[in-house]
Length: 292
Image 1 (cartoon, rainbow, N blue to C red):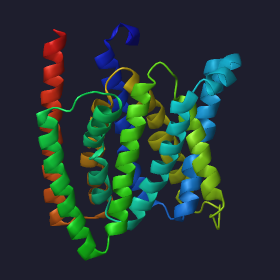
Image 2 (cartoon, rainbow, N blue to C red):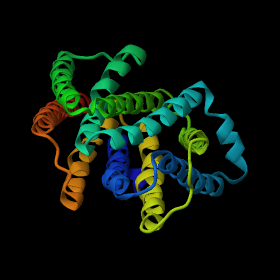
Image 3 (cartoon, rainbow, N blue to C red):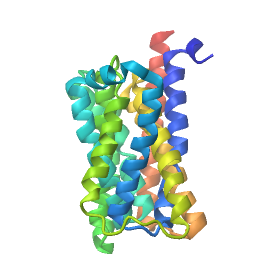
């Protein structure tokens, strides 16, 4: 059935399912009691083992062949993927969840800019208008964070968005190459990097359930799906689906642990989401008209 779908539907379905699995991620991070480096270690090690086993079963004797075929794009993907995995956790730990996820919402716009520069996909007037509006909205949120002392978390959130944009464009550029092995290596790099800073590896209380569940459901499964999606749809389109996390992530946290974002964050976030939503809708509509 999946084979009979168009590339647009395949990519959209993979991205949608992947991001829906991610939406409770911020809540699990907030509910966990483990330290930042311990959290990073397990978010690297557990998904690495889970997906590695899946790849070995899938590729069998061709596993190492697929691993060595990632090329330069795959190596760059490992670096970018590792960095944005680390910066996401640091951001969540140093600002409101809503702030981090709103920074992540910048990924589609950043993807469009990178696609125009490196993939020679032209950036139209509507995109530049959207970039202009979202830039000032983010500046508004940054100003609020400086007053609250959360600027560090917001900066790392922006770096995460940039990493996601780079990842999506690399996957788009190397769409004929399986970059899932690159993501697996990236998770290993995160685990090794965090290992040297972890003071205590023991999982206590509810962390025995929360950490493994988060690592499989919100990390391992989504990163495979989101890595494959750009083979079928453009990088900005893939990152568009991360808006679902921007909307649903803070709601999970707000409802369960009552962490309420500031008024400035809500205003800036609403402007960003509406702007990117309208821009993406117009872009998709234009694409459909051209293909029909």
